[in-house]
Amino acid sequence: MALCALALLPSAWTHAAAGPRLRTVADAPAAEVAVVFGAGLWNGRPTPYLARRLDAAAELYRAGKVKVVLVTGDNSRTDYDEPDAMRGYLTGHGVPDDRIVSDYAGFDSWDSCVRAREVFGVHRAVLISQGFHIRRAVALCEAAGVDSYGVGVADVHDATWYYGGAREVFAAGKAALDAVFEPEPRFLGPKEEGVSRALASLTD
Figure 1: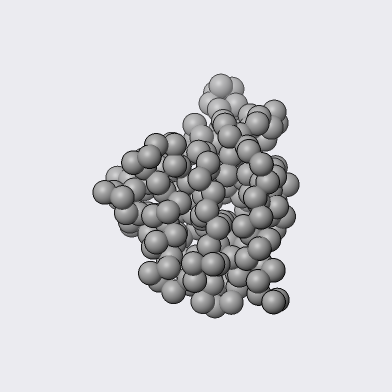
Figure 2 (figure 1 turned 30 degrees about the horizontal axis):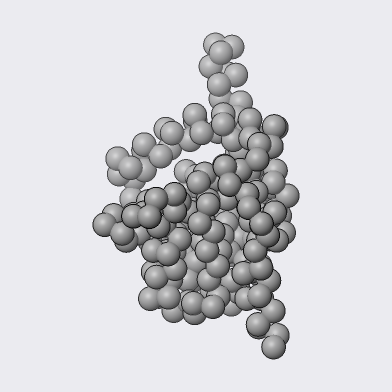
């Protein structure tokens, strides 16, 4: 019993940390930046789960609630490029190319949050992911110093959804360790001005 309770503590932390900061697309607060986390590609195109995250980002942009969309994902191989696929989807759904900034080293949620703050200079953002992941994303970005609100997009409760929910129990443990020990991302790199340039262009 004690071991079970200990194993569930990280999940309890993510729920407590993120609970007051969860919103829907309709009631999401205004923020300069939305952050969309990668969720895989099929034949070079966003998976249905990732497409729904991008749909929510496009809706927030069209509603004037966000000004820039930071897409963060995996581009560790030349034949796998989540950020560019995400950019292509967003431009096809009404988000101007110059309002999209790509993070090619968002290898996991912690790396994406740290890089959003340290590399791209994001201090406040609306995060977009599936409901089973959004609490962990908010908790991690808060720990990384990004004032965050989360939009958890709805999805059919299929096998993928249940797998994602079960996986979160274990992922929350890693998230808690990341928040405590604050490891360096796999690749941090130099600061990039894509977000600041996109925002500055709005006032030119």
